Figure 1 (cartoon, rainbow, N blue to C red):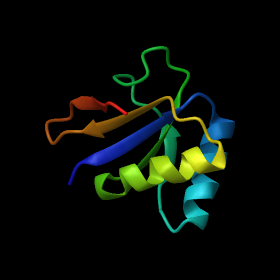
Figure 2 (tube, rainbow, N blue to C red):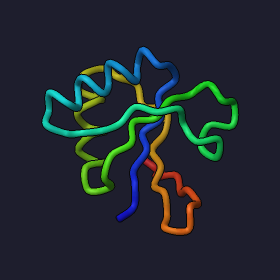
Figure 3 (cartoon, one colour):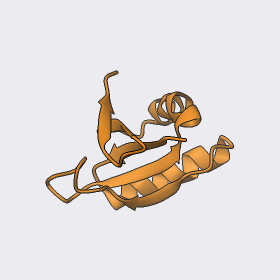
Figure 4 (tube, rainbow, N blue to C red):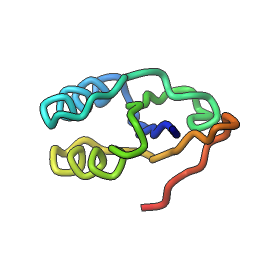
Length: 84
């Protein structure tokens, strides 16, 4: 299964996003964004199953949590940005 990563600009937004998704019944992990998807090094990511990615983005949008980017990790370890 591919992993979905929703990047946010700060740990505070990440914590808020994690709490919002948890209340919506979507389990995720908050982690430092992989270097490949955050070259500046100052981003965090909410990692969740790909099947929940679209719903999670909508939930975060309604809650006012800004998502900087959406990514899918392929089985070979590379990342593909999802266009909104």
